[in-house]
Length: 141
Image 1 (cartoon, rainbow, N blue to C red):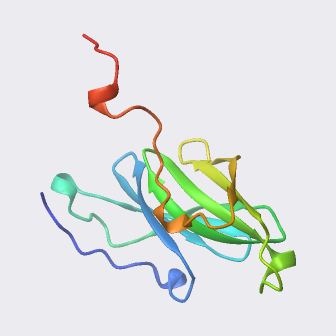
Image 2 (image 1 turned 135 degrees about the vertical axis):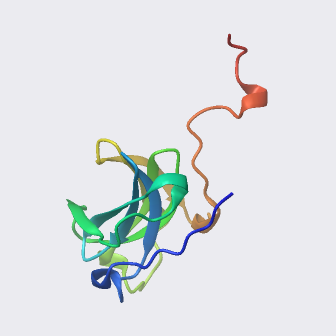
C-alpha cells in the first residue's frame, strides 16, 4: 500500500463536506457540497498512485434539488449516498418522520431517490452495497 499527501483546492476550504472518490482515467475525484450544488474537482494521479500535477481542475457542478440541506453520508463502488433534509424543517422546529436519501452514480452523475429514512436511523452508519459480498455470490468461472 502506498500513501500520498494531496492538498485540497483552495476553492474547497470552508465548504462543509467532502468525499474523495476514484474519478477514472487516472484521476482522483473530490466532491464538495455547496449551496444546493455538488462540485466535482479532479487531479491526475501518476504511476504508483502518487499525485501527478499539482493542479486540481473543476470538472462539473451538479445541481441538487432545491429546498434541501444536503449531506454526504457515504461513498462506495461508484456511488455517493446523499441525504436531503427539507429546509422547511431546518433548523428543525419539529423533526420530520422521514428524510429522503439519494444516490449519485459517479459515471453518469445521475441523481436518484433511493429510500426514505425513518426517524431514529443513524445516517452515518449507512453503507452502500451494490452486490452480494464474494462468499454469498453465485459461483462463476
